[in-house]
Length: 457
Image 1 (tube, helix red, strand yellow):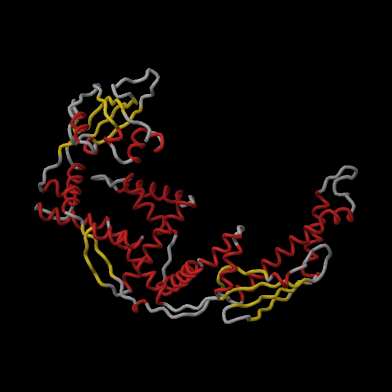
Image 2 (tube, rainbow, N blue to C red):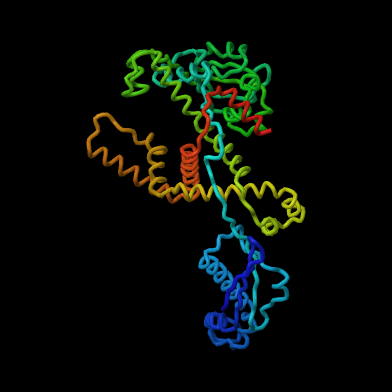
């Protein structure tokens, strides 16, 4: 076997693989002998089918399979050995490979075209993006504070529904007079009264006692189609056909908000030494702003990637890449579309190269231990809380249990891949934030939403 490379352009090369009979025939003969030993055919004892008959039946497909395997191995071994940084995958040179067949043993020459990655300079400090810190509105902050107070509030079960209660019960579809068909299924469900959109319906529901019934228009009460479908335990299309419902509460959950005092501050933010309402709200605002940090990071990342794609000069073997992308498509219209929309493919390839260089220069990697730690801290911590006064033995038992479950979770390939991508992306964004000099600007959530909408148009 002989493998050679010849440059056909600045960023393209042709790889020639020469196979002679001796390269593959030994393996073909071994396979034929194996087939003969295992072949069962009427009129012959097992393993005694004539060699000529076995060859007639199987030699051609075995030869083709063995040559294809050797081609694959030798092609990619050559690419690895020569340290060729290729773009896409090698493409067979159709004109030179035309007419090849494996009817008879012989010498073969195969030709493949490859696209090569260009070298380029990357200066992350040459771009000047803006990093936006999203500041919540006063209404959002008040709602967030209320949610914290509710979390640490006092729960009760009143007899009648209040304006902010959560109610559990049975819902049935009825007519406008409140009549329910005898065979109508009861839907066990729940909802929060303060989510009712129409004030007249809310007033109708408030005051209803346990085991009493109230009828209302579910379309007007709950405007969001997804929420409505979830409450009715059916798909959105079917839920959209339901109008009147009869609801009978079986239990009511009411919460008295926690008082804004030092005891509450300590429960909400332990060991933060918060003693005033002002300090508590400041901490809550910081906490709430953090929930938008992911969105701000994503916006920053998109800005940076676009700026780098536009500013970094990278020459690509465009003709080869167009043919390589089109080669994976069966439909001729889709192939034509590749050539018309190549700029988008080109930008994607450029970004992959830029990202690869950033990852290499910044030594970004994700280890199995990091994924396992994410499972333990982000997914399992809530199920294994630290108990007050727990012994060393309890701590060890909790740690051992989390370690065992996290190790098992690693076996879920799809979920682990998602966690890998999440950690990897966070590391990449943090590396960009640390390396790139960006302007800092604080904006409201509405301003941020408007920016995103304009950019997506």
